[in-house]
Image 1 (cartoon, rainbow, N blue to C red):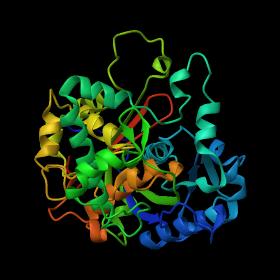
Image 2 (cartoon, one colour):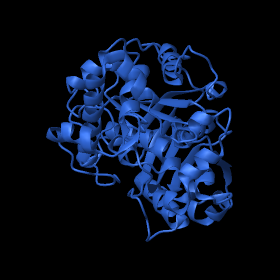
Image 3 (cartoon, helix red, strand yellow):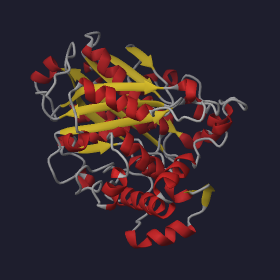
Image 4 (cartoon, one colour):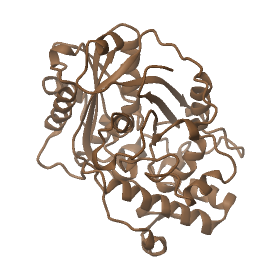
Length: 398
């Protein structure tokens, strides 16, 4: 296996989450953030004295709260410490982990706590998305995150009946996973025998995209403690999960309606090709044991799986039809329930590596997959066609 060298190896040694829900009426932002930080520190058996730096992020535009990191200084632990604030759209949670990894790997800090959150009940997410897009050049964003273009393209390629059934099967699979995760927001109790009924009765949003396919908005926070290899050697409360590598790809110049008839290579495939080539991975479907993917809708989930896993033709549909993305399948996808089940935007992309790390540790609880997880993949998406991917490992032997 090809070796990807880092200046210092970095491990996740603490993970903290809140429960995820549509309205956290019993907590304000500060209290919610504090809960995630406390949980992460307890998981790492550390105190704030052990933390050198805080990396903090959310989408402040969506809640209309300016510089929330200043409001949270006491309760997230940043008061008197060095802090970075990062916002990169829907990817922010994954970017926070990548930035923290780089800060530790570089030697600038030994131990970093990163924190992503959102309290979406206090703002207007769709209003934020639609108002930040130019009304002429970015007309395709004026529906916010709702678009049926992916459904349209897949239907044209593979046929309507097959694609609609696969998308609804994906949606039901994700809900069955979420039902096992006590922290997940949307747990509907869907069953596969409801597939045809849901295809007909779920309210239509845009084109073939229906309400049941789409993620909602959630309140919640996630925090993680990252440290260097020397600190790990001294002993950790929980098994370390190593961040092997990460990659980012974005293509803001193609966000308008005017990029022409030829669809450019997706940032997902571009990101995956770079990451896998650098690490000598030729068959991601065989190499990885679990994939926590940023999947805002069932159609995107299907389409993006083929991009991330470098699949060809209708391979992704065949795998979906053969139940290979279920918890007992070849590559379990989103055992946590993914983005469709829980979407606290500033934390959403951090939940992906956090949940992947829990799977590697064997600490995922009710949604822990049965086979041993040694290699995990996680992704984030948002902003101007902005993709982030992370590779996590159980052992430091790549």
